[in-house]
Image (cartoon, chains in turn cyan, green):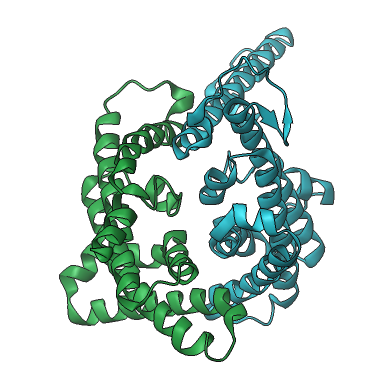
Length: 230
Length: 190
């Protein structure tokens, strides 16, 4: 019996706990490619979220009618349909953005986040939960892309969302808007995120040990700590 | 001459992995050992050339004459999925050793965005048939090159004392960044 989680949890877990970029390490290609500026990152993430939410909804609705053997192919067709919609709308309404993102809008089809959530979640849960899960993952993706895009834009071209934030005296680091800068920034961000998680974990662990000592519990073994989840 | 330029451009100057960011997932996932990197690279190159041929035929002989360009994304992805499945079956039937070497990597290739990216880019740039094939081959060669170099570095990296939070994906990304810097040296070639 699966533990029933609250609807709110379905949404919030995607923000950090299973954040697509930092925890699942999925969807790296668009993440690295489009985050030259914050606005590109936001546009890409919104497009991905749209596809993610609607394909999760549809897959979750039809999940009982899809034979198991052809499910991946069916998911891909569903996803491709929504990606085509996004692509055509972007080409018609946001010409500049569409040019800047280039082939990465059509490439949302093979973004592992979407197929991953379809396979791991939407194919097993009801539509409401699937949509919330998709929204959470989408917003988690959006936050990651926005942060990465902002860092690269601020240091690489002195601006954020087009507004200048660093003085003219600051020589922009060209490398940040080149491909190499994407790899370096994301690598460092991930490393520091891990460092932060590690530190929090250690603090929690120490707090628990101190608490056990206070209540006079003698044996504090690894198993006890593991059971408490630290 | 034109064809040679397309090949060098796809393989080195605009390397698919290091400057277009296509195929990052296998690049991080399968670059642990040099031997598996070579197999993965070969399998991908093979599928890339086939994809270039089939997607060119599909796009220029079916989609364009009947004004069906809007079906580009679903049709390409389905063709690639079918193609990979087909290649897997043929290799299994024809050559057992080759199947053992490439087999487990083939299903992974369907979701490799480098393949779909290749088909889309070739259509977008309106390459003719030969150009598409060379483009596919160059992209595959570049992918293999980046993967093998990365695997070589990571084998050495196992012996290095990397700080714990940076182990795994973060250090791989940082190494990839340095590699991308090195590949920028090719920029002057064309």
